[in-house]
Image (cartoon, rainbow, N blue to C red):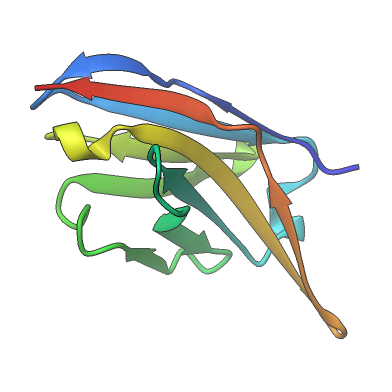
Length: 119
């Protein structure tokens, strides 16, 4: 059973930085892509950033230039460096892994880690 475990959340003042980490129980190369999503109170879960096995990255417009997603293949870990944090970045951040199969994608989720940014 695939497990994704997030860490690195916490509380920070606006303008500060945090680094989130997502460790997989499987080889990271099993997944075609991994990413981070977030869900703020009263809002739908939204995509933050993704990275493919070929290291192609994509970002939500709201975080471009501030967040950086990367992979540590040796540690089967995906990282999200968050700089210049804003109050509106406050949310629960979830790690996601996607495995594309002939019959469709299999998606896996972590339990989430809370990020709170105070203004």
